[in-house]
Image 1 (cartoon, rainbow, N blue to C red):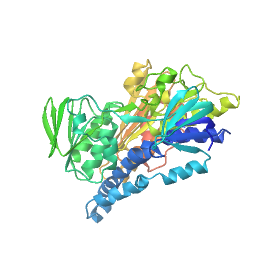
Image 2 (cartoon, rainbow, N blue to C red; image 1 turned 45 degrees about the vertical axis):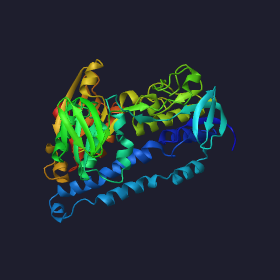
Image 3 (cartoon, rainbow, N blue to C red; image 1 turned 90 degrees about the vertical axis):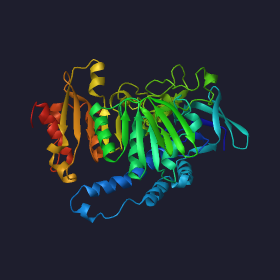
Image 4 (cartoon, rainbow, N blue to C red; image 1 turned 180 degrees about the horizontal axis):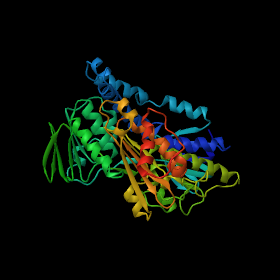
Length: 472
């Protein structure tokens, strides 16, 4: 192996893998530096194991809500089989197949902790203490991701709380679990652990899912309560104490006892101890970039994915990675750079068309901005709400289907700024909305996108009818 490459990537998660792959496809040489498992957080402690934990009980609930199938369901969820299925999706926390993919893609791998040690230079400390210096001809990309944040609540750190890592990799289900937080991880893990048999309490300082439309968080709170979760919103956590029997959490509304505690209060960039001070940046903070993911003030350093703080979602990080890998190759080869809005080298969607699914009970799928965010940005908007009960496909999908859809319309341009769906299995509806938002498809043209009958996609027709302009 050489010590000089066109591109050095710090971090072998899906973001780092995609940066390197696109650069190699563009004719460059690339090496990835990784101190943990190749595949990163998403493969082993986030996206894949969490959705595997959620899918088995979700499938069981789906059958229980369809007459005919419901009568055939006579057993309870098999928790051990669910955990075993989760383990299969993490490859039992082994990265052999991911390493093999790197090799097949022509990307070198160096194991160890990498840090910037000079201009276009990375020093890697191996597990044996030996150091190796790598030099980049063109660029270094930081794709080190993020860590779970642990707020400064008295006694919380000393109580050794679970974070998303422990929650998604646990081999036993505790009898009871208290969750501090009201975001995506809190909602999903409360759904999962309640479905797996734990008694769950959620303590949220505000409401649930504050980044999406308020009705979404309200419906998820109802759904969690239907699963037996004690959802407490507007609650401040004051202290945590662990003893031999579990934890005691003191709030401004009383005490909660549980066998285990999960802190799910957000993420922090994994930017400490990677040599940022060498290039004049502050460790522990998000790294600011332009839309080509190049670090502001640098012509060779890039920050891609969670570490730049733009959008902390795996699919959005991979989107950034495609733009970054392509532009690194283009700049190295003195080719034209298309960095204007919606150009192939610009991560424009980070601002205007970010999709997200929360795999809670019920699911939440959203893209673009909320009504409140659109108004705050100065748009003249109208929000249109429709219940899924008006859609024949939803009634066929599940008996007594409950859900809500909202589209946020820019009244001046007659395009969609945001769309939100809440209900069972709405995840597969969101990409159509993403295309409409990213493509700025006029409402007059959307009338010609005829949804098939009887499917849940007919919600689009109901939204357009509720808006009340035009007809195809």
